[in-house]
Every structure is written in C-alpha cells, then in structure tokens.
Length: 155
Image (cartoon, rainbow, N blue to C red; front, side):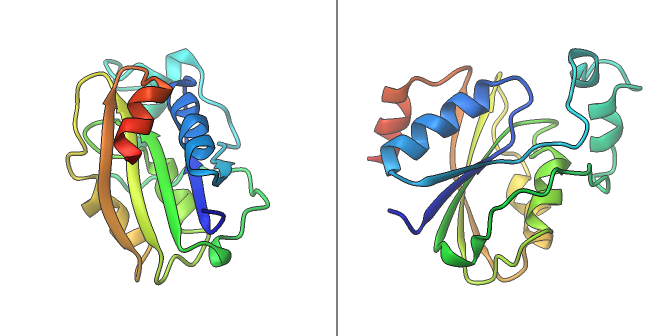
C-alpha cells in the first residue's frame, strides 16, 4: 500500500495515535499536519467564544498557517485524512493542508476522532479545498480507538 498516505491533524494526541495505528496496518506513509502555532488547552475550549478554535471555526473561512512539510501527494492514489471533529466538521487547518497540494484524481478517505459527533458536513466543507478529488466518509471513532478498532474498520 505504498501508494497510500495517512495524513492527520491532532490537537491532543488522540487522532495522532489513530493515524499511527492506521499507517502501520496499511503499511502506508504517514504525515502530520502541524500548525505554525501549536494549540494549547485554552485554544481548544469550544465553550469560550473567544478561544482560538472557536474563532477559527466561526464561518469556516479561517486558514491557520501550517508548517510546510516535505510531503508530496503526487505519488499517492489514496490519502487517508484524519482529524478531530470540531463543530461537526474538520478543523479549518485541514483545509489549509488540502489547499497546499493538488489532490486532483486522488481518493481521500476521512477518519476522525470525536467525543460524540459524526462527520456532519465535513465532506461538504472540505471539497472546495481539493477540487478534482473524491472524498468519502470513512469512520468516526468515539474516544480513543484501539489498534483493533482500526484494524476492524480497515477490513
């Protein structure tokens, strides 16, 4: 599955653990989407209308700056894209990542971690950031998934 990439954003480590398990199971390459300014606990307080995450998610137009990594998606057919669910969609930093590459002709399979929400409008909100790509909902894992949970999903 070397033509498969697992790319992920993780604010607290939960999605990172899931992505690492997935990459191992698929024998895929892995890439972390890193914000230029790391998120701290106060940034993630969705109950605070002034928190960083709340401001970024309001309206969906924010594009948090990311650290430019050495990933080139041109050699991949399939990209598994992981993130925590924020406000029933992907964090806008995921759009930032998608807008740095050409995903035309790629299959993007979403996976997410969540305390209880589903994908909501994630596909609808991500599609404009990667025109020409096919995005499909994969799986939302409630809480912290085990390697067995991920392996069962992949099967």
